[in-house]
Length: 403
Image (cartoon, rainbow, N blue to C red; front, top):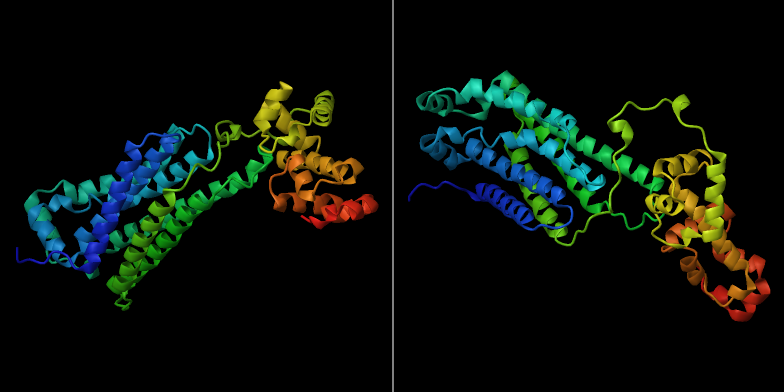
């Protein structure tokens, strides 16, 4: 074979496509907890495998001519990946955040741009015979792009950025809501998801600039080197995908997941329609917290407490938020601080270090303990112990273990 199909830039595109396909197949084969998330991540990777092939077929110097004469139907097929990656990434993000996530009819609205693009490509290209397709493809250069195609390309890139922003909003809302359900959030790790979404968002934002540069060159003869910009994007995607695969090997699920809010499926209740706070229920909660001390369990969740109290989770959450004026995270850690204060001031606990008291009170990280203690008490745990039993501290040396 004496025809050079690939240069080094083309090889990078093929390596990106290959590793995405291989990793996606691996995710589909390995059945484990969170399989729906694996399936969605695999679908996202398949779109990432399709996009480099679309670039290779349309812009690869040697490969384009080979593809035209081999099968013109190869053109534009892989371009559907552009329109699918955003919705799939959003669904994947939600599958990590929400417990037992399933796609609904409302989720399918995100496929409307994909369907519209598929219809456009059918009527503008795929419905023609092979000879017509070949004549449409031969002699093409990026400078020949019509204003309509450039507009569609620009809209595609903007849409992908919008989906990236939607993913960030989902993560932001999740971070806000976890404090309503968890008393310990230090081990809820968003690193993997944030790396994926932010990397996706940066690359797609860059793609918008590439599209603008192409438009300026094709329509206004303003010379902007969109080719170099495109190559930069291709190499960055390759690095991102490689890093994503590396980090995913040691990744475990963030947490057991939030329940989807009722107002996602039903009209949101107006403030005046919210049920009144039951004072008897509030008293029951207070008595249980003081007598049974469930907060001593570091991993206590809203669901666990509702089971212990034998009351609906929503009623518990409503009472905590409205009667006590705190989210669940603040509510439980308030009791933990009170327990720590009692132990720090108790002469019988003088031989315990502050770290021991922190752990015995239900905390498992110094950062949260120090932060809450300073906020609620106005001083550090060690300062509080010195003020309440200075003689005992001096005698035992327990103050030598500051937190």
